[in-house]
View 1: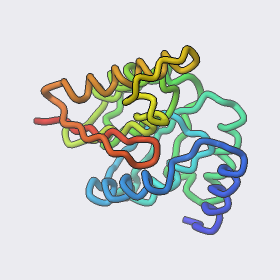
View 2: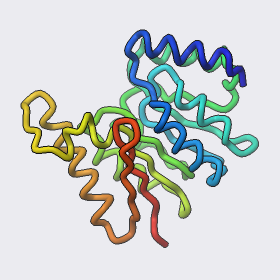
View 3: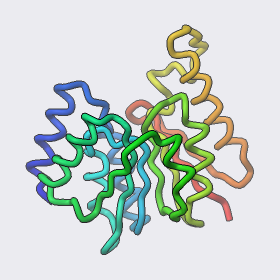
Length: 196
């Protein structure tokens, strides 16, 4: 993997205000992936491909990341970036809306990384649970959403997103088959495992 190229992509994304995984969040995910040694990862929300490229380093031999993106410009940029970094064998971009694509997938994944439309997190969770391997992990990034989720925030503009993120947290913390830890790294990261 071309780390120099990856750094350039990261800096460009930050300059252009493209939402990419924050460094402290990535550190936590790196540790998880080191232990997990995943064969297949599903990512919901590709953006410019930065997080998928970072995750690809931890895949088992012949492992694959399926990543979903609907923004046409971002897809084009992500494809170019993935080739520049030299990981095109490991990353498969599924083009379109995750709400439509997810129900059509029947793979089993070791990790699902959720980082797309905040208002759709409860739906993403339902689909992720369906496709998760027994020892798999679901990570939901930006789960605390600028602190709004844990405050009494009720402004109209973000109300749906905040409500649905709260619903997601309630589901993963109240479901007796799941064990969830919520970390205050980056913009909040929920780490959910199935309890066998």
